[in-house]
Amino acid sequence: MDTKAHLFLAGAFLILFAIFSPFAAIAQGVLVRSAGDLQAALQTTDGGVIRLAEGNYGELEIKRRFPALVTLQSESRHGAVFNGIRLKGVQNLRLEDLASENGIFVVEGSSNVSVAGARIVGTFYCRDVDGLTIRDVDISGGQYGLILNSVSQFVVAQNRIRWTTEDLMRITGRSFDGLLEYNILADTVAKRPKHPDLLQLFGAKGVAPKNIIIRRNLLMDPEVKGDVIAQGIFVSDARSSAGFQDLLIEENLISTRSPNSIYIDGGQKNVVVRHNSLIPGAGDGGAMVRLARKSKMTNEGTLVEGNTAKLLVDETKASQIGKNLFYGRKSPLRRFFSGPGERWQDFVPIAGSPLDRSGMGAVAFLADLQAGRAHLGPSWVK
Image 1 (cartoon, rainbow, N blue to C red):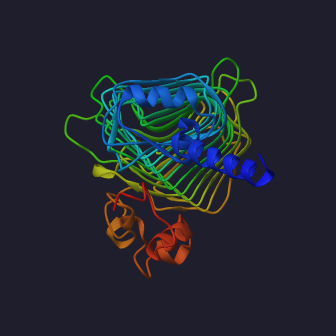
Image 2: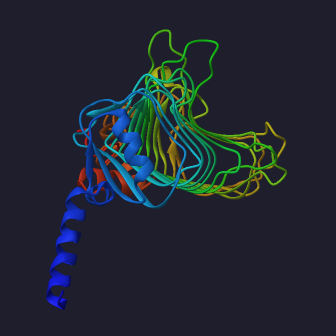
């Protein structure tokens, strides 16, 4: 057989392989329609896109470290539904546009995992993860919303977390190198004796979360009869002799009736609370920045500047307090703010008001929101 014939047969074989090989199909984006097909695809692929047709796939568990990125993508937004998802010891996995309902969503002992465009009903729990991105996700209805326990190199951006019976979000233990931005954390449905927080940071096993940016988020807990009002950003119980270090709490919009709207206990090094806007809840409660003495640490590494709030409660007297606008109790808030704090537009200062003239608070963030240069919460939620 001559060389031309060899080349022809080789080319024909490659074409047939590309058409019929399951490995090649997965690399190009195979479409699966059942839980069995999905498990088979996950076992054989070493990278690429697996698309999921609409339907219920039951409970999903993955325990595989993929050599290259594998993407599970719902063919239609939230059309592929799971009754809980568990990822254990996973590497290089992206979940996109899926729905997880009636079960917990767990990521443990994993690396390079991202969840995007999803709807999650129940608690989203992450532990011992290096490299985690959660973006464009709606989380609701669990005991907790999102828990990051010893998670490093993480991004939590443009999500909505709501309707939990306890904390909306927790960052705990050996969590570091993180960014939280453009999220909506709003509306717990906790009953007594629960004591919820919108966002809570605390340590574990002698290590506290550090090197984390909490920037440009909306945190609210409207008063509802029978519900317990949540605290805002609550940083306490470092459980480390070094306390909290390298935290930036900047340009957030916060409205809750709790007196602990921003609470820092143990801010020992480079903890910065800057340019946040706080509106009281009903009955003039909340809108306070509190530097607490609970742990008997000094808060000596904490800086508070450029904020607008009702009051500063400085119990340790060791922090650096810059220029802020504290408008006091029973202030005529309608002369300051555009509304009562039930949406981001309410935080916009009334033109010509003392707040507007001061330049304090999250003015740059509010300007970007008004101009459409920034968007809060999932991009698919209007």
